Image (tube, rainbow, N blue to C red; front, side, top):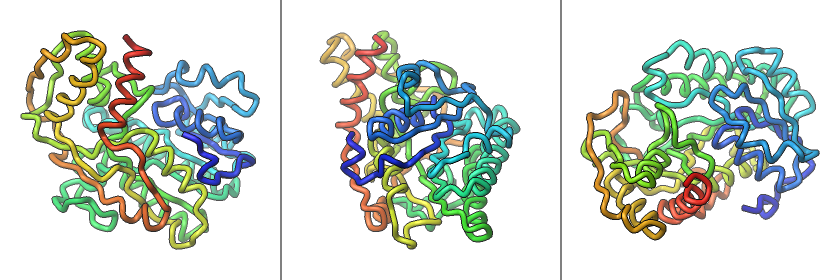
Length: 332
């Protein structure tokens, strides 16, 4: 994806927290391709050195090993920075249920540290990863930014608190903020391993290894799966926007269509079977629903289209095709 087509100034100095993670490393890579100076702050708790190892030789790239739970690390990272793309967090609903204290420390206290550091360094704008989990028990479809329910997990609470803090910092200190509510992002570099692996890379790896993908529930739960390049586009548009109406608010980041888990497995089998025809014969297995899971998720992206000019290029099928090709090439 060519960022300069969106008009991003290559002279901007941009900090990506969690820059060694799935989304963060893709952002770092794309920004560097555009000629920007990029700093990456990561403690490698969940981020991977392999995601950014090829960037270390780039003269415009700076790696800062540090923890957002330490204010001094945040302050150092924000020195001489124009824009912050705050991706650092402990994701996963199940993780937050198993260990709510650490999720809160990273996602709330760490977030507050970054806001303070960004304010004190006079950064132009603080753009942060919010979450579709904020919609909680709201049954309205599609999800519209102004209408949320009660959170269903500790993780969801932390991401909602982020939005509240960002709003207060905008009103109290004049720090420009934009929150991006990510909806089930997938794509290259997403880790298929570990207890909290996202569903798409997990299913891909199971199928590539001729194992039955395990679906939580009956497969009818649906998500607005969002390819990584759509997310990169939204972050760039959040940097570039000049309208006062477009800042100090939150946006859904999605494609605007939902796919249930049974459909997802079917599409993955179709694409992977072009490499290995045996995969087409593998059927999923079904287990219990996960605690804290929202049954259905579908985003309205009208606000992002109207205020930021968002125009997502990848629907679920074209995104999955790209992702499957990457996984087959890099992980088989």
